[in-house]
Length: 61
Image (tube, rainbow, N blue to C red; front, side, top):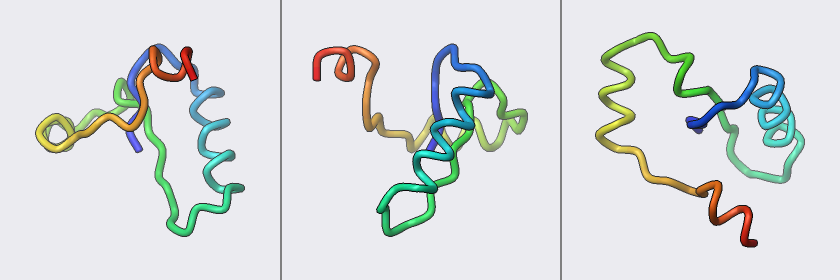
């Protein structure tokens, strides 16, 4: 899962922990988009990404 926005490494670690401790049946890798250094990986993410949540949607749920 790629996280966009101004989140600290601590925030990302918290999300990783929540995913790891959840009842999800599949493992989830969590990474901050701004920390990705590979142009090829960013190009791939940009071409196939689909939002799961937006900040706006989370505020109103």
